Length: 278
Image (cartoon, rainbow, N blue to C red; front, side, top):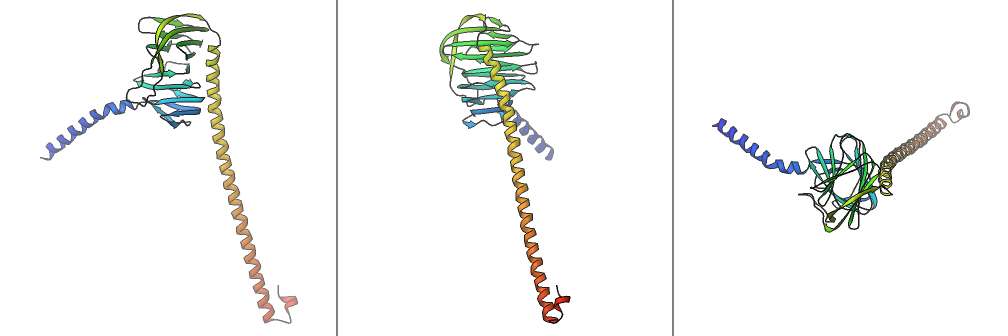
């Protein structure tokens, strides 16, 4: 009887774990926040070291947000940007609703993809890549500063090499959102294929965004260290004040005790206090 009960309990536990598997898959970790200003996730202010999950949506107003993905990759969201995340096995997808995203991808530890509507942008494997994907009105601009970006619309793929920009014209549409997440509706693009031309100012802005994100992260760490130092200094000052107060109390008590001894001596030896009493 007890063996049958144990078997039933084990089966129920296994069924429960199978039922919960999709929920755990939907909460896969995407990365962590390295630094941000004027940015939110799900409507809550984005703070350094915040962990981001598949389905999370980031919105940047007049600011910037930098997200660490994998061991060394970085994704930087510029001002007036809305994007959400998907995590699938060894791949992280950024669903760009509006604005721009800069990608720094030095290795192949995790596949990093940016999607705008039906267009997918990925760094070419085997090379350090630094590039930018920007939505400008009804156009999509893909620029490479280092390495090569592969732009694919499901029918053909274009290689955007170092120093090149690929401009794509399209009409307004709704960008895809992360399943089961709190995606924010944005403006996507139904793409009309474009042409590759020599890079202009766009690739420079990608590098600037990465450097600004790194500087922001370092500034955040410096501010945190300064705050800790100020807290420790305040604690030390408080301890010193408490010690000074205790010393003053001890001195007062000693003075009172000495006065008591002097009075007692005077009472007992009124004629000898000048030489015998303190």
